Image (cartoon, rainbow, N blue to C red):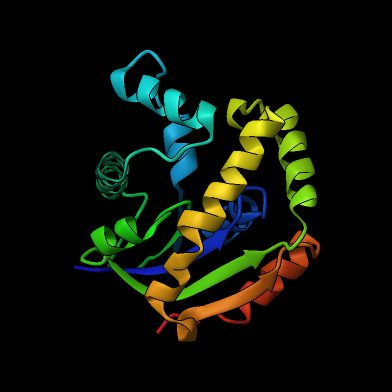
Length: 193
């Protein structure tokens, strides 16, 4: 069974998590942020140490490990009854992050729409992420050099994924608008057939 899926795409700091949490609170939608899954790992575990090693450099965690952890998390959410794939739409952010991951997930996801939250000004994203680091105690957002590396990694590895799914599925969103305006724009494109 493929999961009916909406993808939230955008550079770090574009507002994917904010939008995902709001949409995920609507009945019939289940939000999963891959970054939250990684940040919730016990940093004393092997996988937790590996995540910290990669994230502190601003690098992506290896694809096979990312997909394995994603699948385990989804399966756990189904078992716990939090995600009901027969009636819920899956809202993902932070995955797939590159072409290989998109190909690995193709057997699991029926991607209905991709909401691309774009912010043309990198400095705005850097400032957002610095504020978020302080507010949410996120170590992966605390260092400006790491932030800039993450933004460059996004441009190089993640943006091409949009082409993989085809432009007919991509809805461009202006991430510089107020969150309620971005949400309004996203919801105007949601079709749950």
